[in-house]
Length: 551
Image (cartoon, rainbow, N blue to C red; front, side, top):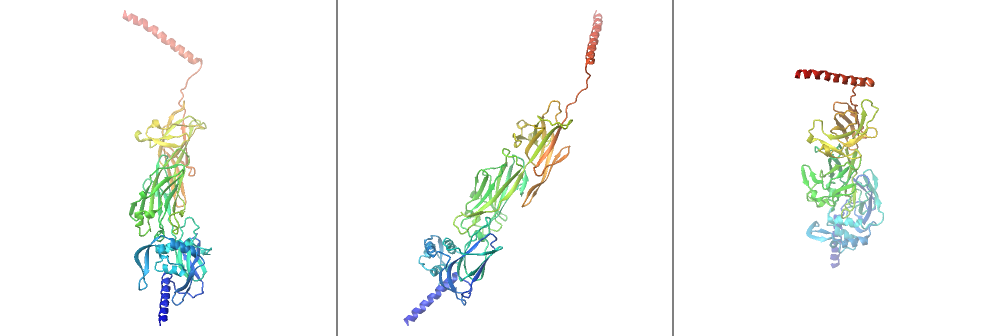
């Protein structure tokens, strides 16, 4: 009788153990001996999924219970057990109550305490059974498996955005994502008990865009400015979806800005805000900027530590908005198309601690254009004659602009405007050379006046010339182009600019001074001599008459 009671206890223990294992590995029954297929959907292209067997076992078709649990062919069981028993990761303990329902005990334990007494595969499965699929224990368990894999696994076959693995025998499997596309994020490790099943995953990745301010707080892909101006840029970074973002314990988020030669970053000019709907929060204090020779970074090593971000219950429509300023310089390049490229570096692997594994978004471009004025100085009377040595100064404004409001250009020897000054005496006088040529680089879509300051001997000084540059810029996601470029001369003709080189040619005519007619040779001398005699004779005749009157 005693033996029967003991046997009942053993059978009961086996049933309880089987029940506990199946709480962790719940599936509908499949016929033992059949092979199965896993389909992974929603991952996007460019992934490589590999499946490794963690446990083997037998499924009872009528109940869906799994028994005879042993280590699978895809893991190094010895080192896996050692890693489980060494892990100090803190977790909330769970256990089964008297009714077989898993509950939290309220105690915090290290992972190694959960697996301290485990030596066999089924004991590990029992230790895992009270914990939910998305719990920290299961995630840590998956990471430890990922570090103790064996063999090459079975590669999934890609078909568009879906992936399938067929021919799998009954067991508990670990699915690893070997991402191959830089702009994608890696999928968190997946644990799955095989049956014919579909796993929907989405390893979402952030996006970013770069734009330039049109001075009216409207941001576009391309604009024109003049050298010396400060230009504000805006970068908008999206966050990954909530399910992806929550998979990470640490999330790196760094903007990279590739500066062209014509733009100088203004140190610490950046601002950072978190924007979601109508709510905007200043989070600049969590970000740093770093300046290299031709690249600037603005970022945070772990945005999950930012309070405003940690409070997000849903990252949908959440944006990290960065603005920064750069100055158009006039010292290094004559490039009229200053293209800035930027991209976002972000954490891409939730299966690794820290944020060492990163990917980047595609580069995004924003362009700042300046225009070139080519002057040709010509003899208005003999238009084949080009005039060298004529001096000019240029200012922003109109002829009617008050003196105190004029902005005069200082220009380097290379023709590049370097800065704008308010005093004409400080402005640069430029001289035509090499056949009446003069080039000025760095003008904007504005009105300017060209003033002739040095005139050649024998020529009349040219009146001030007022001209206006106008352009239209096409802003699209794929292309940024100057579509039209015109030069309108006050009281003169319009000229078309070259939309590729962004140049205008302005012909400035100078006319020689007026010549008075004269006779030449001996006739002129005789005229002078006779005139002199007549004057002397008149004086002689007048003097005697004057004396008589006095007497």
